[in-house]
Image (cartoon, rainbow, N blue to C red; front, side):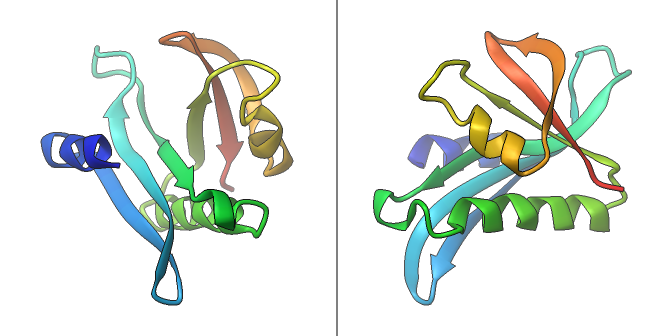
Length: 120
């Protein structure tokens, strides 16, 4: 999480948030807002950059809450799509994101699978 917070201060498009259950930290998310996806100033995207949920809180809806919170913020800002990337593999989070409505774009970014959720 320390690395993510440092990145948030360096990248103005970062939107970091702590997820609490009462007063107890149970997760951390960092979204990206209008990042220059193709480095050409043509394809700006917003989405979920990082999502961490404590082992004790996994399976209790914390991840779903975090993703839905990012989606709500992106909608508020006028976004129509929300992107996420993940490491491919049987033990990866693809099933989690697919259950939330993300679908594959067919793209690979930095070796990671790219998913998108329509927000409209």
